[in-house]
Structure formats: structure tokens, C-alpha cells
Image (cartoon, rainbow, N blue to C red; front, side):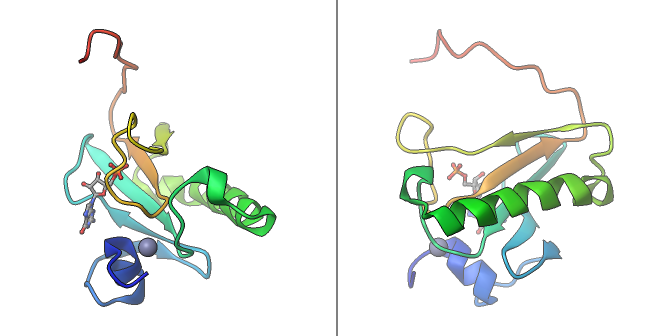
Length: 117
Ligand code: 5GP
Ligand code: ZN
């Protein structure tokens, strides 16, 4: 996708420090961290929603999740972490290229969103 910021980062058109890269995904630090450690695991294939995945995409995403578990200790996440995939408007997905937030480096209380507007 020409105007996708994550595709540009994957291609190297926008420079970034890649904490991990293989044929399926990259892992970078989030530019606007929401936890002491905040990474983004970005599958290299461009699609926005889980509902758009082909069967092969689903297999690849499973491999990405397994790889995240394997590299977590190298990212300072040996004590645990939280994965988040924002999907669509209610989740306030801002980048239309599927990505997995990896949060950690601290205790992460699951807060109550019900009083939010
Ligand atoms: P979303 O809201 O779509 O789930 O998450 C998008 C995330 O991408 C946000 O946390 C935002 O801070 C991050 N982000 C947006 N642009 C860039 C960028 O150019 N570089 C990096 N490293 N992160 C970005
Ligand atoms: Zn993209």
C-alpha cells in the first residue's frame, strides 16, 4: 500500500530501529509509548482487519504470535506482557495495517472503560 506508514517502515522508506525482523513481520518500538515498554509487531502483509484475513494470513499471524512469545525475553518482557490488536472505530484503530501492540515493563491493570464517552 503506497500511503501506508507501516508499509513504508517495513520497506525501509521510513527509517526505524527494528528489534526483530523475519519474512513475516517486524517489531519496532511505538513512537508514542503507552507503557514503560511498548512495541508494535507488524505483519509484513498489508491488511487492516482480522476479518480480511485469508486462511494463509491466519496461519502467518499464528506464527507471528508464537515468535512474539519466543523473542519476549530479548525485549525485556520476561515478566509478562499484554498483546492488543485494535480493530476498527470503537477500538480507535488509527493505522489501517494490522499490528499487535506489545505492552510491558510494568504491571498493567485492566481498567474499566465503561465510564468513558
Ligand atoms: P492503533 O491505534 O492503530 O492501534 O495503533 C497505531 C500505533 O502506531 C499508535 O500507538 C502510534 O503511536 C503508532 N505509530 C503511528 N505512527 C508511527 C510511526 O511512524 N512509527 C512508530 N514507531 N509508531 C507509530
Ligand atoms: Zn500497510
